[in-house]
Length: 152
View 1 (cartoon, rainbow, N blue to C red):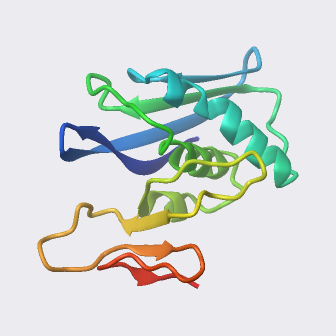
View 2: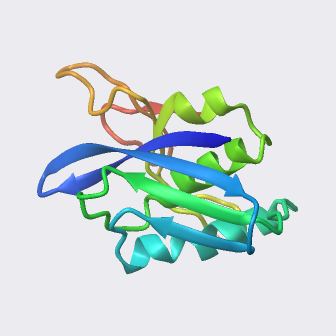
């Protein structure tokens, strides 16, 4: 089963949609990320593995393949962690596939399975049309981001 999650890659100041496809396949155990990732994106597999381990979720002894599409768009940064984790959890059937496909995620993972202070979860239609709020965020105590709603 191929599971999907969504995120964005930044090309200058423009955000372009990226589809994260994850498949858990028979074969030699491994975890690969393809689709023109930079070093930070390639290291996401270790951050995702550590975060899932902190949640007591063991990765199977199978081949895990993550494709970042479109392949010709360079992917940079650590905000690919959560979409990779969501697609992997959906491929392992730990979460429903439609839950992973329904949002655009931009968050990096911590090895203790906590996300960093600004966790953003947006509907798949991102960036939003002008003058509409789309994002919900969990902010550090006492801090707020203009235009975002507080997630509790």
